[in-house]
Image 1 (cartoon, helix red, strand yellow):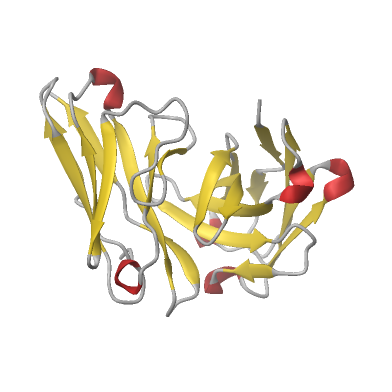
Image 2: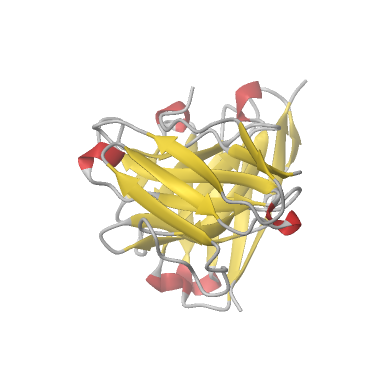
Length: 111
Length: 120
């Protein structure tokens, strides 16, 4: 059971928009800690995708965007492409547990 | 180009020990906090430990406290994870990563990982 809750999977057709939710609590996201997102392509290491709500490292397409409200955050992928098939993880910090926490991961499938 | 290369993984019996290494290049290693994150087979990511640039601060997830020790050698641009009293539940791919610690904390560069299997 992850501290941050993500849907197990989401899917969409090429070109569509999909969103991935990340639900936390008052001891992590709701406490004001930033949410960051990672993409893990099949068989590879995670890669930083979005940091501090909605900042993209160099090389990450602007099709990826993040947002945060209250105790939740979301990752949106617009203009879905086949290469976006991957697992996506949100990450924050939990003040009660004193640990960096990840969501359980969401598998994105392109139909 | 930033590179992180982990090594030292393998098969070990329960109760055994293993030392993981992470060789860093392409950036000023001594300027960064560093971290270990693991991923059990088919599972999600779990933060394991962090270490400050000068080793003055080290933090661990509860499940490894007293068993794992994170360390670094800035002269060798290397990060280590000494793992003792290993358990089956420690079986995972272990990734080292750089930490951005500027009021917010996230992991910006990752290695390819090294697999640790704890089994008899």
